[in-house]
Image (cartoon, rainbow, N blue to C red; front, side, top):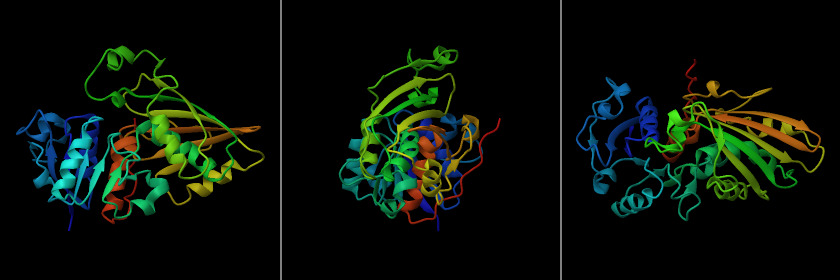
Length: 317
């Protein structure tokens, strides 16, 4: 029997991507989609690409109705999920998975870094999905922290696509303003840094992170470069091979990852290089895939006690 799930926040990029993944899932029935502005409208009016795949209509948030489902995924803007989750708690919802930043490392919630915390997520009733930058950075640095070979602060530069800023355009995020441009923003002040440092602290001594995010002229994807100082002569290639030997959604590449090879997927592609006492780790993910919806679906699978699904192939070209 399929698990019945609902998605709250159906109109955004993350909500639409999560719906796409759930509609294709063999063990899940998408039973409800919730939005604030489009109540009563067909879901295909919001996401025309789903025509012929679903007949669901957008409905208003009703905690009592949603609590009857096997799981609810919150794809709402940051700041909105806290109140909704509280209402679902009061209504007795068995499983809630939050894709926003509202519950990451919060009491009573498991942090959903699937490739490192699968046991903790198994049958977990409340899971907070990591952020997109946080996923790329964490997967890049975690093996070295867990091995105890990081010597000091880690410097990171990472570029992200325009969908990471959400469906509502602004002067700094609207794609026509950025598609022939490249710029930094929130230099050394990005909100994902404390999130990553808290996660790495679960594995060992978390290094300080110096992070510079870039606004890139692509629609989806994150490409991150991490410069990690090492304690001495260590085999970084072997450390990464051992760390990700049983995690099919993390792939190791010999030279460089490529955004187009992870587009539309739940993969994180990594490449590791070394010069002297510094490891350089390159990471590529789809910010809407592994950085949001695909990882949320992996969290859902573990929460339901299902085996992790097979990663999908990329959208090429």
